[in-house]
Length: 172
Image 1: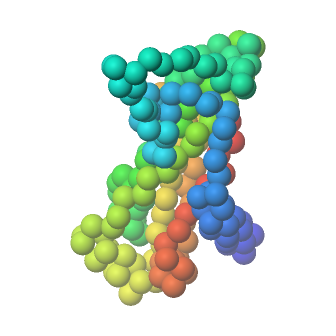
Image 2 (image 1 turned 30 degrees about the vertical axis):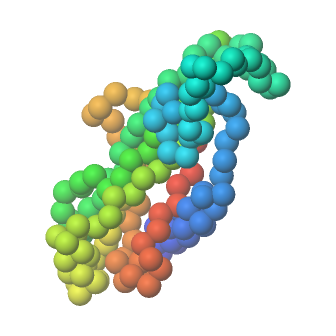
């Protein structure tokens, strides 16, 4: 019963987080959104060659102990019942590494793949069999392949009426 309550609590928490995630906007890195190919980045405008341009510096300064920024991507996988896991979506973020060694994920974006016709059929079978829909993420998104995973599962019948939404909290 405790395991069921834990799974239920995680599922409810994940559902709450995704509901709020579209409202999240990070302003930690003001420049270079398009350089990293992030969704929602500011479009770059190119000045006309005939017009003189003036260069202005941003009023917000970068924090001096920031050592480097890089892009990181990791995959959300899902499984229907006891089937193997397959890709269900992707996360992308900027990994900010500070000079003192600490790392922070910023500009986190999630892109969920739509169910294919085959996956829709598998989900219908889960409903009929009252089986579990499972998702997993790497337990440490900074580790190399062959890593361990965080897995969550919920009865398919619990998702059918809720629009199949996941909510994630990622600690670094």
